[in-house]
Image (cartoon, one colour):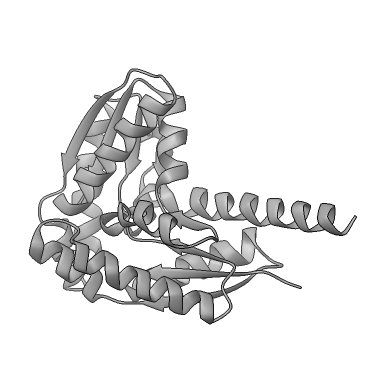
Amino acid sequence: MSKTLAMLHTSHVLIPTFSELCEKNLPKVGAFHMVDESLIKNTIAAGKLTKATIRRMATLVASAREGGADAVMVTCSSIGPGVNVLRTLFDFPILRIDEAMAEEAVRRGARIGVLATLKTTLEPTVDLLRETAAAQSRAVKLVPCLCEGAFDAILSGDDQTHHEIVAENLKDLMRRADVVVLAQASMAGVIQKLPAKLRKVPVLSSPELAVKRAREIFLNMKRRSNSAHG
């Protein structure tokens, strides 16, 4: 039987990106999308991820499972910390969008720049990188940077202003870090627009790395299934 991945988004704008990545990296895996914008709106309003929002995430994950998902990916970094709780509630894989990116960043450099357009994303990403470095027994210096005004621009539909603000901050951060992570999946497009000569250090974004991690998980599922029937 073919496997299915459900993606839990807080914005519909990410659906085309993840559909393309799944088609490229998971051609034999079915996929469907679930969107609840209130998850990020409530998190921004509260200034942090609340227990009430985590409970609603759990309800959505349960719904995804009932809808046929063999794994669920939470694609919003601001609500990513809730994944740790969800993993205690469910016995199937739940992926956090930025975990694979954090692991790659810690492997690549001791000075890690963290670029975000929301404080509610910047703080959990910094925490994740710190936890990942500790798990790998690596000493890192984290250099956070908040792109003021970029999130408001993209909310109003002004993608160009968003990209310009992020690109300027990114160029500055690259001078101060060995590797830079883009804390939000929505920032990934900025890398393609930055001229190659300006890419002084590696810049990591979460979407493709996360989908490749999902591919590993599904391959392991297949191996275990083949072993069980062997």
